[in-house]
Length: 114
Image 1 (spheres, rainbow, N blue to C red):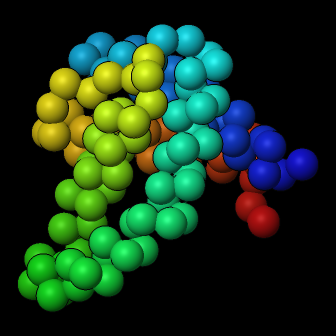
Image 2: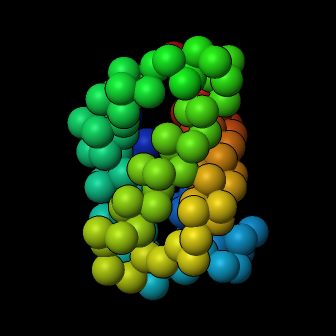
């Protein structure tokens, strides 16, 4: 039940993101659900590999390169999922950051601490 709630929170967070960043487009709520699912899969399967491969750069930048990796994952999902568009890599980095902040705040408010 908690997994379903987090999935829905992430989908709604994507829709809220489109209001805060009009350059990022999400077609509808169904597309937002698909995006949230694919983004979750990318974060579980691809992101750890990228973090390990870029570990030296991440250490040199004191972890700030993780923002670039998150932006890349966000952009990758936009390239794969139809109905989701991110105009550029800079928008992807900022969009990923804002999206994670919205999802974190909504999860904290609605689900509380676990």
